[in-house]
Image (cartoon, rainbow, N blue to C red; front, side, top):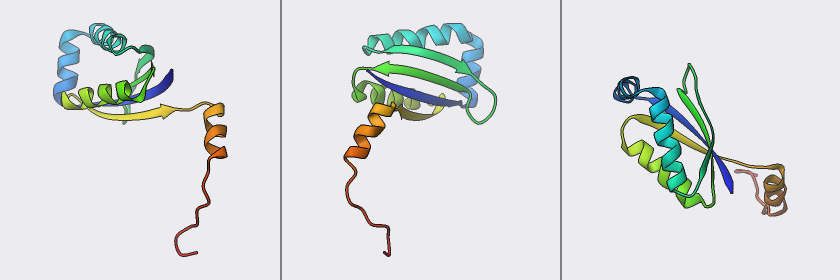
Length: 106
């Protein structure tokens, strides 16, 4: 399973809807949606600042994570940023596959 970090920034309508429905109900709905895609939600945290919600999920394939990001964005309730979270093993595997690459102008 691969882990993904979703960073959500509410729109005015999204925040109004969440306040009306309740934060716990929205989190439960999100967790149910992730489970329906074959994944799990590791954590969901609200914050102050540029990002209103930080959510970490686990998905068996990238397509499910992408589908969720697209569905969230299409509601118009959030600005969504999705980041794959990599392990040291993932980074070592990537380092082993680094191609020869030159900087521009060199």
